[in-house]
Amino acid sequence: MWKQDVFRGYAEELGLDMATFDAALADPEVAGRVCDDQRDGLGLGVRGTPTLLVDGEMIRVPGFYREFKALIEDRLDG
Image (cartoon, rainbow, N blue to C red; front, side):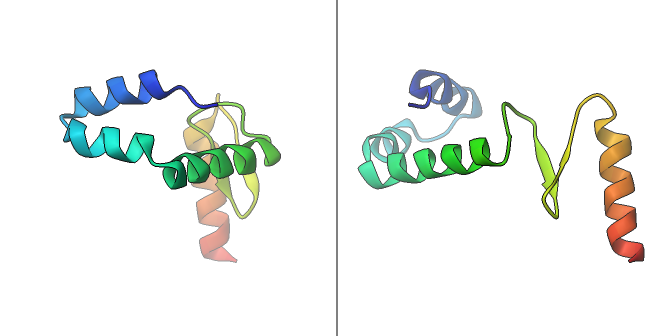
């Protein structure tokens, strides 16, 4: 399961409405969407953040900016 305390801490740091955040956090539908996203990410080989995929091609760090720029330019040219 995902790390609720970590994300709650991020929400507090961002100044989000914590009552609304906590309601969403307790909502089984929201939890289901988070689990679905996590499953999809793992299926694509995502092991952490940040991770970007362009047309299914993963951009890895180091070289993140260079690879991302090259992929975008390639897609724009082609």
